[in-house]
Length: 272
Ligand code: ADP
Ligand code: MG
Image (cartoon, rainbow, N blue to C red):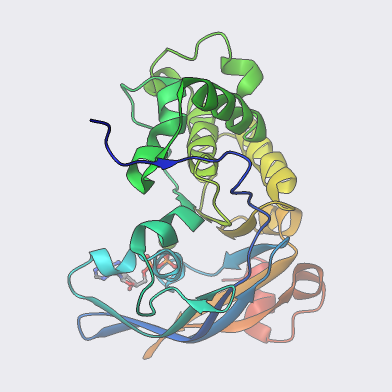
């Protein structure tokens, strides 16, 4: 007897990007409020950079966007997260489908270290219930590694463990793994903070190439990086007695060239 499976139609699911929007999003850990009424639209085809000092809630915001926040027992939230106008926390929304559509890449590259490079790329298929045959998987591995800018470096060593790659290569492997489940949105939490400048550049190039296909939201502490990769920027801040909120957001060129708020000007010019 064959198990019931969902065939992965490689041509059927195509990521063209989606618009992600929050409405008055607030978040707590226990009684500690960490985000206060954040309303932000992250449109398709645009890289949105989230900037701001440590502890102002940027990672929490990202984790709410793909429903990882709720994994913390004390965590709660209010407000809405809309993916193409559908509330991802609404009744009838399937958690695995939401996580498939909204992928995440973390600061520390986290491939499965003993799993082969090829199997790392397709690892997410099982988790999301998608299945592919051997030929489809091979095609997917090549496609995703190519899109992540890693194919040429690893095509002759696909059976080697993911953990044998350099840090920058591991991060690109993680991007390839995220892409394999055809996400509409890719969330990146300081994806280059642990990488050298050359690897950082490679990831930035990849972000630029993916932008037209996947909606990207990136947290970065590097203002030059925010200026290079993003078209839209949001400045988060937590102040004495005030949980994290968005001070100012808008076109990246304008935010850096003509910030409206003095605190934004101070932050983007390194006076914080
Ligand atoms: P950022 O990414 O901007 O540095 P975070 O979202 O990591 O900020 O943290 C925002 C606030 O939430 C901080 O005060 C932090 O201590 C708190 N926080 C983050 N994660 C947890 C958690 N799992 N439990 C309790 N508090 C947390
Ligand atoms: Mg963080």
